[in-house]
Image 1 (spheres, rainbow, N blue to C red):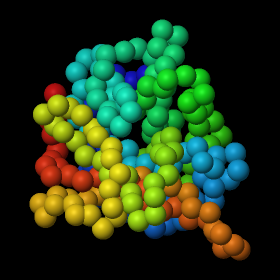
Image 2 (cartoon, helix red, strand yellow):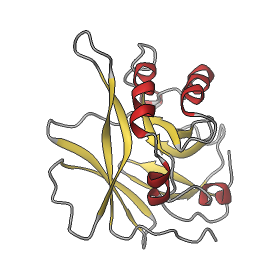
Image 3 (spheres, rainbow, N blue to C red):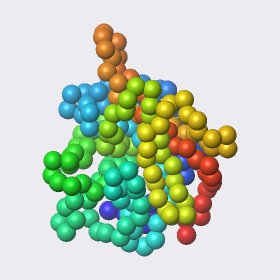
Image 4 (spheres, rainbow, N blue to C red):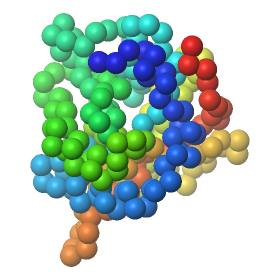
Amino acid sequence: MRDHQWYNNLPTIEVADKGFTDRGEALKKLAPLLAREEFRGKYDVCLVHRHVILQPGEQMVATGLVTQPEKFTAGSDTPNIVPSAWTGAGIPFEWKRVKGSEEIIAAPPPELFQEFLEIVGEDSLLGLSLVLDPVPEGQIWSEHVDHDKRQHILEIKPMAGPWGEQNKLFETCWTPKPSGGQGEPSLVFGTVCVCAQCRDLPTE
């Protein structure tokens, strides 16, 4: 489990988005891996980035659709808080609170991370996250950050918006889509970040 400063040194969404230059090729190569039977419906591909600045002892923990800093140490005394997002090397950087064991999806196995890194490379900005619930046709998961409350908030919105004239939109998560026939599976973006004040915040 890495400390707050490690998390604070992750790139902002804007920096991560600019650095993801091989998007089409990487997602095309990752699609068959994530679509394999043992991984299907469990994991998405995500763009690794930070949401807020953490203080000592804090980690980003989701309760429902809101993720915010909490002070906790992973271990047997927090069995209801499990990792929910990992770097390509398998380092967890976000967590979620579950109600019971039936809600727990196991972390990606080492062999998945190994194959993942063989495709994207050691320095990739891509990682893995637990799959989000499906949304109705024509809608999409939207995320934004309330910087004053230090909260990352998920909600379902129409793909057509409206998104706000001053907002920037960034693709942050891609989910496997079955081929539906003889073709190859694909990864389609499943989450968009709506950012009204994207900026490279200080890490202290």
